Image 1: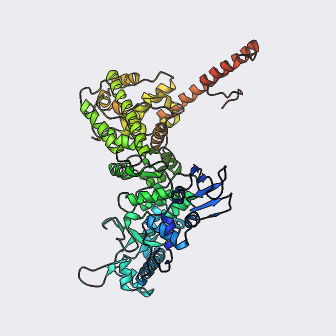
Image 2 (image 1 turned 30 degrees about the vertical axis):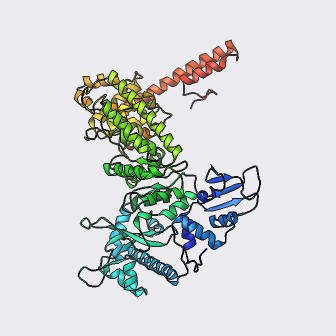
Image 3 (image 1 turned 90 degrees about the horizontal axis):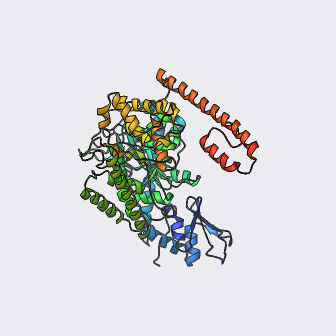
Length: 635
């Protein structure tokens, strides 16, 4: 090994932050996931019962059979009989970090980085102080309008950059920093006119950006006036900061994840979304810095947990960002490393959803997440109509080409099987649709031609690229196609407002069918709406984009969460809604009375039959009458 100088402050911490212990230790020990930890047989003793644990969040290992424990460096030292410096050099090479050699200039470079970080820390403290001053009143008003209280400002170290060309730099100079250091840290910019550098951030709400160890290395600033451009401004690349390699709140989010049972971090699109999620109880939230998610950032996500959740706005831009993340992640997925996706209702971001519907709605949206494989399938399926053999062959070619990007052979084979199975099922649905109905026969993209249940799998993916399809209509038609998912949903449907006359009329028809206990079918609903003069609206619905779902499928949770988004807050019900609620209550009372009468009959039959064969009878009775428990008490 070549000689080295002293290891600069922070180098070892950064090295350990870049390496996931289970990756290194897993090459020598066969590890199995157990809760938050990995478990295996001790490499130090000949045990037969696993007592060796690795915790990626705490970045340690513990061997109970030998009593040994420590970090990843000490594991490499012990198992490979290396010195501390040799182990650090080995791991640094693996992490892509250059270990300083016997060159005083290398140590000076690390000391210089430390000095630049001190500049950023001083700026962060100054911005925090300015937020509390009179000139920060506009920023405070903005934060209060977004529902954030002063305690949250402090937690996230939010600040305000004075609306002055050189006030921040003057303060930093007074703190002992040079003009060159302030410029190199990205806090000032060179003047095009050859004058003194000017402040990079002026009149903006400031978000300090920490590195993986918590030190401030850059800033993001939000404009507070409508005419200020750009709306969000980030630090440029510096010796400390490269935006493609950093995630906002990464250290805090990783620590929050380590305290829970979650499978990964939550990725949203901006600073305010990450803060809103954190304040709502989702402390594992992070955000990229104004760019599409990069491979380096995805690698950071996987170091924190195996299955991060990417949460995107439910508009076309959000869907595009999700698709780009699919392409970047596909080559690198492997057992224990994948992505999940949440696409929120159109026009909403996490901050909107939390403020309008509360943390519970956000939690339900996260619960309804879909895996990478499903989003890949939806993207390729909806790329074009599937009304000819050539277009169907094109779908298969696109799917297999995507699967071919996966480097891990086992995962690649699993994706090919899954995608081919989805394709076979979908083509079967198209054939069935052609046989059943014909709203738009012969039109590419119409009934029987292509498309599928975008809303059946994930709310937020638009069904009609032309924009004419209404989300409420699609969700409700899916309920008509799958009546079992409406069990217990009467009150929710009555309360929902789909903000569209056709959607609300369809809702009323469904509720009336349920209350009157009539058989709900697509034909019956369509016949009624045609008689009411809605034939044109029905003809605009692309029925092939609607699939049947079951209550035991993940798609059911997604559908239910999407319906609940349409429930208005603090809105008085209409007279018609009150009538429907009254009818519903009467129906439920009648069902309970009928069940009680049958129970009395059962008691009589029990006495006559004895207990010999009553088990099968009770099973049938409970299936018919869910209002009663087996002990005979009301729910």
